[in-house]
Image 1 (tube, rainbow, N blue to C red):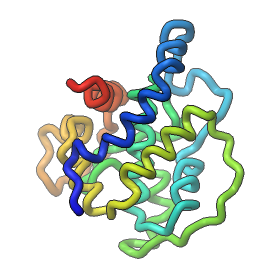
Image 2: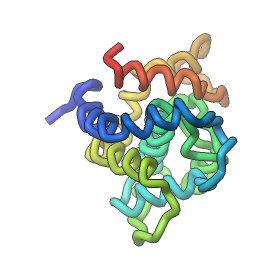
Image 3: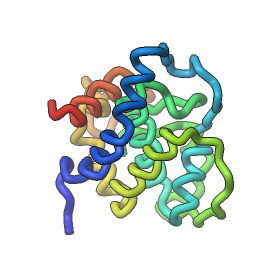
Image 4: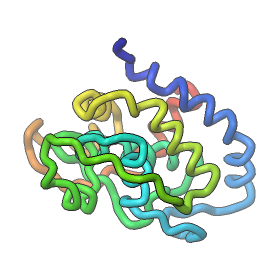
Length: 187
């Protein structure tokens, strides 16, 4: 069964409702800046390992799940999940360069599933990660690529570039936050 882009967000809406009280508390009482608060220094590899503990997957799918984790974390908690990397608007969608370098030798082949290990995610971050997995985990890398290509953050970062033109333009945190928050509020 094929999901439409908006069907993919239904599961996330449930988590957003669960997080709403925390989100309002945080935004009314704390200033959260990307990289500014560091109870947990979460790396792009921590997030990737979370998804790889769920299943084996291609590097493309891993990149897109990691991107969605960051994007929804921005929208819901107004804070970066990943403290050590940004996403760039590459031809095949959002890419974290460090993650690409780590797994590029797999090419189009799946990265083996990893053993689940204890990770230092907050309860709110873990809820978002689980929701991203539940929402997007059944899709393959090509479907997720197509989805990201239809969304404003990647498209804005690709303005003025030819479809197959290489780019290292960073996808705007504000674009991610605003776009996915607009989906949440129905905009």
